[in-house]
Amino acid sequence: MKKTEEKTALIAMSGGVDSSIAAYLMQKEGFLCQGATMRLLSTDNGQNAADAKAVCERLGIPFSTWDLTQEFDEAVIKKFVRVYLVGGTPNPCVDCNRRIKFSKFLEAAEQDGIRCIATGHYAQIDRDAESGRWLLKKALDIEKDQSYFLYTLTQQQLSRTRFPLGGMEKRQVRELAEKLGFINAGKHDSQDICFVPDGNYGAFLERAAGSPYPPGDFLDMEGRVIGRHRGAACYTLGQRKGLGLAMGEPVYVCGKNMAANTVTVGPEHVLYSRFVRIQDINWIAIPSLNSPIRLQAKIRYRQKEQWAWVRPSEEHKEEIILEFDEPQRAVTPGQAAVFYNGGIVVGGGTIAAAYGK
Image 1 (cartoon, rainbow, N blue to C red):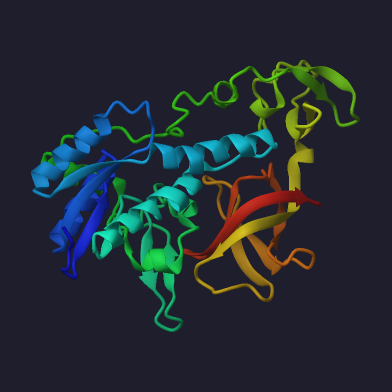
Image 2 (cartoon, helix red, strand yellow; image 1 turned 60 degrees about the vertical axis):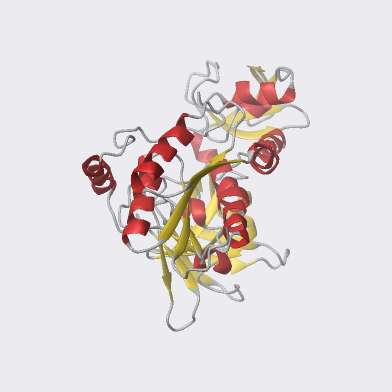
C-alpha cells in the first residue's frame, strides 16, 4: 500500500539493539514507521529477523523480511574475494552500505512512497546553510562513531536518511532498550565481518575458490627465499603474527606478488609511506576538488585522524593524492581513506597504492 503521509519512515532492522531504538525514536518523533530486515546470507538462521519482528510487534508497526542474499553475494562477497585475489584488502562494510543498505533500502522506500529511511548507525546528518549541501558528521559517541564506513553516501541518500542514534551514547541506548523491555536489550554487538564470523579469511577464501591456495615462497627485501607460506592471499600488509618464520628479529608482511605467489617480509620501517593514491572518490561536504586542501584523514577505522594535504592527481584525473605530514604505517590497497574537517566527513575513496617517505 502506498504511503502518502509526509512523515513516513522505513527502518532497517538488524535484530540488534541499535536499530530497535532507532525505530522507537522515529516513532516517538511522530513518523509512521515500518520495519524490515534484510536477509543477506543463506546461512542465516532467522534469529535476527525474529528479534526485529518482536520489537516491531511491541511498537505496533508492520514488519517484513527481504531476501537480498543474491544481491549481497554479487555486490559484497564476490568483490571481497576478487580484491583479496589481486593482493588488496577490501572493506566489505563500506561496500554493503553503498550497494545494499543505502541503495536497495532507499529504492524500496521510494517504490512504496515512504519519505525516508532510518538505521541504527552512529553518525549524524546535517545541512550546511550556506552551501545547501547535506553533511555527514561524526556521532556524539566517538567510540561507536561509524562515519568512516558511510563516506560513500550521496547527497540524495543523505537527504532521505535519518540516524536517530547520532546524538546518543551506546550506554544510553542499552538503558533505554532495557526500560522499554526490548528482547534484544542485552544482545551483544556483532564484531566480525558477517560472512566470516570466525575471522579466518584464509579458510573463507579457499572455500570460495573451491580449493586450497597453493603454497609459495617467503622472500626477504633482497628477494631471497627464506621460507614457505600457505598462499599469498592469506596474508595482509603489516602482518607479523602467524608467519612461522624464525628471523632473529621481528619481520612483517611488506608486499605480495599475487602472480608469482610470493610474500615479501622485512623490518617494520619499510611499511611506512607518506603519499597515497586514492580512487573511486565520493565528495560530501564539497562538490569536487580543484585545488589542494588541508584536511585530516584516516586510512583504517580505528586510526586517529592524521593531518595531510589532499590534492588532485596530475597524472590521473579521477584520482587524488594524500600527502601526510607524517608517514603512515601499512597503508593497504583496497581499504578506505576518509577525509575529515573536524567532525565533518568531507569525502573519501579507495586506497590504490602508497609510496614515498
